[in-house]
Amino acid sequence: MAQIFPFRGLAYNPGKIDDFSRVVAPPYDVISAGRQAELYDRSPHNIVRLDFCRDADPYETVPRRFREWQEDGTLVAEDAPAIYYLSQEYRLQDGVSRERRGFIALASIEDFGGGIHGHEATLAEPREDRLKLMLACDAQFSSILALYSDEKPTLTNALREHVSAVKPKIEARLGEYGTSKLWAVTDPGLIAMTQDALSRRAVFIADGHHRYEAATGYRNRRLAERPGAAGDEGFNRVMMYFANLDEEGVVILPTHRLVRDLPDMPFEELEEKLRRHFHVEAFPRNPHGRRQFLETLEHPEGGRRLLGASFEDDPRYLVLRLRDGETMRQLTPEMGPELRELDVTTLHVLLMEHILGVSTRNAVNTDAVAYTHDAEEALAEVENGGCKAAFILNPPSAREMIDVSLKGDKMPQKSTYFFPKLITGLVIHKVED
Image (spheres, rainbow, N blue to C red):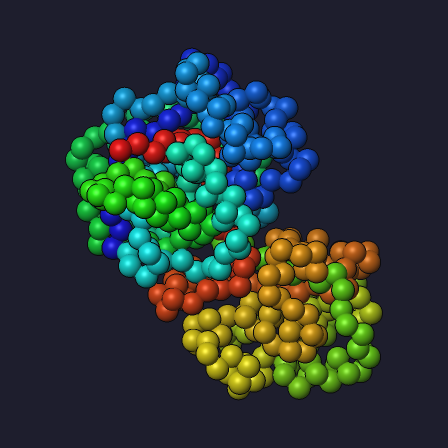
């Protein structure tokens, strides 16, 4: 179970910053070069200058800048240890307003499988980058998004009630990420209630696996330097945002695949292979057919195991329903059923690798496969010649993610997209003993 702690977080000084919306940023891993330049232009104190610095040697520049912002009062520490209640109001494409509620606190770093569970494999390069930044600055600039389960949202209700009559410490709006409002909660009773609630629940990382593993590496480095450490040092803890997965504000969006190139295969051969493993339902490639195709995918009958496909040379949209699970069992004998039965696993293992011969190993690190959360955009890419094929997925549920995590398995990268992402710049964990 998770051990959590309050902390004296660093935050932007309202006496220095008159518009918090100008200094916050998306998470580093979704910032393009163009967006990075835009954020640099928004403010000389935008958090991107620390969390995703564009200088030639960020591990030398960032610690100096971080120190200067503390010395000149741009960043100030909370007067007393606190947890930070965070409300994030946002809209999806359906236009409906939603709210995700949670709180930021420190969590004791544990190896996966104890009180904290991961579900996604990581890559060495971004993991090493986050570790170097942490070692250079002795700080964590952004929170990991973590989930816990509580069918009765007693904790978030109590936190919201506590701050309801108080102006938020920080309020910032950032495009598709909505409006974030942050309050510092220093009440000992509420902090104790929060610690007790999480001490009885498992925690699942939803977003931030690279940062968590970097924090684990950072802890290990510091422990090696201090073999007599007591265990309660700041380097043994990592900053997390905790949200209740049983509340409606926790949303997972699908992540569709765009394949840039395909091995040469006659259309008739591809059709035969698809029908050998899937029931194929075809829709004409026109506006009406597209609408029917997407509606069929969004409302699967008799369970899931449902994929959508559009190929460059095929004038149809295809809905593919797996005939049975025997082929998947033969292809993945080492894999548990929780992971094997995910749509994304069927797509990667059976359709992309076995049928099409497209490797999905580390595909996120290459130009071979691209990703989008917009199905219309994915289909348009095929029709405009931007890629050879698009594969449309329904998102896994939070419960499916948990089932995979509890078995110690790892989902393919970019299997989950918890929306909205947490914005960076609300609070910083400066690692101190």
